Length: 158
Image (spheres, helix red, strand yellow):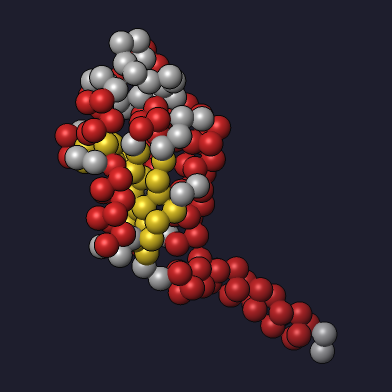
């Protein structure tokens, strides 16, 4: 008689384990989110990218449209340290480790947008930026943050 309750309990636990990703998707649904990065502290940037990865994991890559908008010192996230000289930037954090994190997020559909005003004002050539195409450059980082919020994106400042 003891076997039946244990078997039932085991089946219930298996069902809960298998359905937990589905429960997360049911809980969170589809999301549109913009993360705002404007600081140049490498540890804070890594923490922000970890937040982004955790967000994608919780909601599911198919259920989220996520953008990271960088301006000012935040552009250091994608800037190759070899190009720092001649710019008005204090640091460039686009090391191979950071590039690997960025590449992993991009493979999951995360978009990285860079402020054209910052590039011009700080004398940063596009060649100095890791995996940034013309389409990834927005006229104004702060104006882009506002535009995305008007389009229904949730704003997050890690």
